[in-house]
Length: 121
Image 1 (cartoon, rainbow, N blue to C red):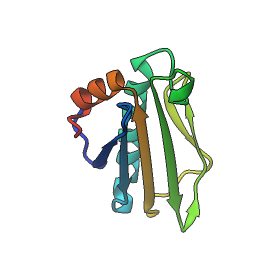
Image 2 (image 1 turned 90 degrees about the vertical axis):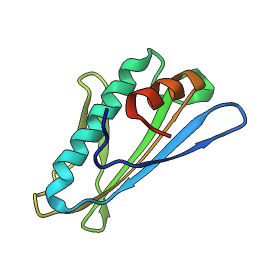
Image 3 (image 1 turned 180 degrees about the horizontal axis):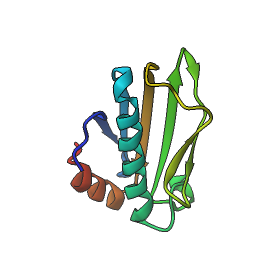
């Protein structure tokens, strides 16, 4: 997957858990494309294994935290795992720039697959 809007910084803990963090604030006209990119990435991750997303300490392969802000206010968002969609509490208009932060953490096996899929660090 070639990422156009998300650029990840990567960190790894002593147990091999890897965390990728991205912050994006594109021009307003690119907000729909950014949301599509996040949706596609989370859909791929959701297909990785049956134990996700969720706390890694409880046996999940990966987990994520997604925050979106627009007009200087949080925009509640929910990942619908049944149909692989992002559900926003309201939709930004084409003139609304958003700020999006995404953190994805995963087990060593997930990390290897994520790196291969996203060409990530």
